[in-house]
Amino acid sequence: MLRSQSVKPAYPIVSVIIPTYNRSTMLRETVETFLEQDYPWDRWEIILVDNGSTDNTWDVIRDLERRDDHVRSLRENRKGAHFARNSGALIAAGQILYFTDDDMLAEPSLLREIVKGFEPDEKIASVTGKVIPRWDTEPPVWVLEHCRNQLLSLLDLGESLIVSDEDPGVFSCHQAVKKDVFMEAGGFNPDTNADLFTGDNETGLNIKIRDLGYRFAYVGVAVTHHMIPAKRMTQAYLNSRMADQGFCDSYTQFRQLHPGKGRLARRLLAHSMLAGLSVIKAALHRAIGDSEWHVDFARLFYYRNRVRYDARLMSQEKWREFALRDNWLTEPGTLNAAN
Image 1: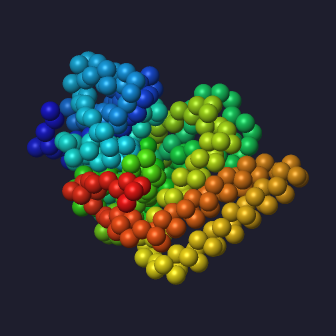
Image 2 (image 1 turned 120 degrees about the horizontal axis):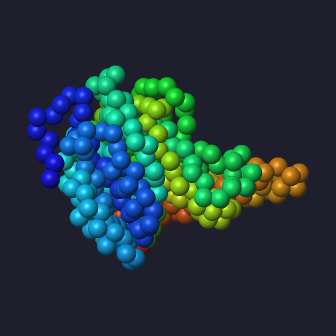
Image 3 (image 1 turned 45 degrees about the vertical axis):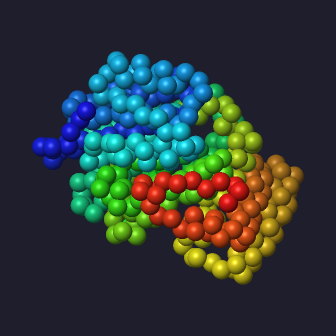
């Protein structure tokens, strides 16, 4: 196991944490790109966290672990990638935690470049970089027009270094965080919990990091590629993605505003009206041949889930308490639908 003593200032130990679920082939591709990093060989490790896979993922993980001493294995059976990320962070040896996914392909210089993002200011605690697509098939024109952004977890702010007091658009598929700050912040808020989408993921972590007084950086030359399969270039996927974002945003706003039941009721009504308007707008855009209708229609699912989450917050005291929890490292409990 790597140890964190006698750290060379220019090369902090980096723990690459990869949650995975039923993607054994893609996972192997992802890991191979990290085994080719040009970072000093004794200054990094890979922690592969099997999040309850039912295919041969665990066998692939153990094979990778036998083949290379950099690789460590862990199982996390609570469903949700951010539970897996938090568990990986708790056993990590690195001063820097680098989070990615099992469908990412890292450039060989990624670790070397991304750690440079911490150098301009000691208050920088979270660093990201460029996330560009690797399309499995030629994408539809409407996807290229409207989805080369957060809808597919893509980020391109150019080649420069950007330092900011606010989250520049960080995704947990490409995020480096100082481990001590990650622990201080209480880790990622969960994304799924007992099969329910509940939290705001890296958004919540980054809000907590900001509120602790830390800063963010974007390093344009720290590049990773996101594998985009054909099933993510469909209206069904866009609807699902926007629906998840609806839950996420309601969770985030509740944590920020602490609204009472009256305010939640007004918000529920407003989101119901916006859901209807989204359908009308989509129909109008489609009638005139404007591809924006795809996003308009997906907003129906976004606002529908805003309504659902606000209704849950109104009716369930335990859910309101759950949503306000900050620390998911020392308080890793779950909440199910019956609560």
